[in-house]
Length: 361
Image (tube, rainbow, N blue to C red; front, side):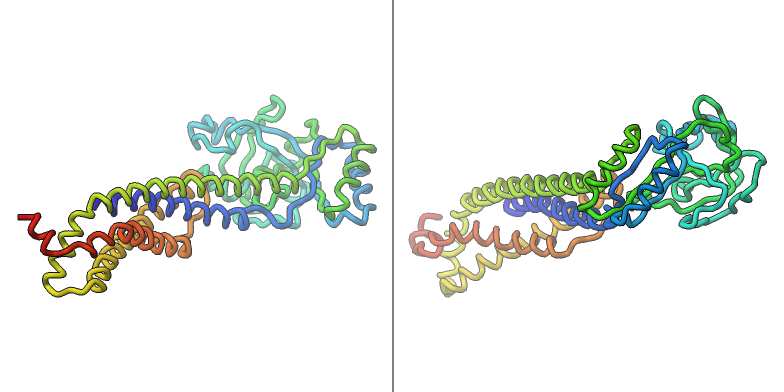
């Protein structure tokens, strides 16, 4: 029991780290965008947006550009009640959010429920809300949101839900309003620019020279640093788990050493009964292998549960069982117990049965 417990604790930590590491690396490759914009440009003034677009359109290294007007607003009430009391501490309600407006439905927007307002709509304010976030907040069509924009509170009705994918690092707004609802409100524009890697420095120089007030945010560089940081975290946790396993192996050797006397007596009895040294050695190895396999299987179950809990509740990501590291854990457990047991098997095999049995009397 001591052997299984000593090895099992170390293997459990290693199994949990292995599952987390595999899922974290999968999340990096799955969730971080492979086609991210080179830059976000913010603080583009209304009288600069046309010249800004024209300058980028004339650059052959720019493969794509997107822009949209942007205001900042805070959702203060939902159907006349305090928003946080209705929907809790959701991230959409934590501080101000980017808001845009559009007369016509954007070409890349997918409406999941409701309908877009007419292009010339001038009636009461309307909002198109991100579908996933609306579901998390418990919103439905017809609900009214009070949004504070620059100190002015605007109550608007939700008339449609649309898919907003924030994972591609592109432009995405939780809320889009009809233009008449924010007419006259001071605002700037935001833009994303996709370009060849070698041309990014030149694009940045051109925009900075023509429009010094516009701020550029390098997206690809930021994603690269995030990937490096997550990879470093995964490596650090793996090293920590290996240290825990080494500690468990030392305890395992101690447990094997403390049981050497019992194995000497057992070997003596088996020799008297006619067992050969090879059969005795095989029985010791089989017992050690079974204990290691048991410790490995228990470690996989506990480690998988721990990995699932961390990925689901801490990382807020999906979880998938990683079989390769799990198999390595079981094989490692068997090998560790075999090594620890076989280190102390020579004395029991060499002991003389008569001397051992006489000393037990």
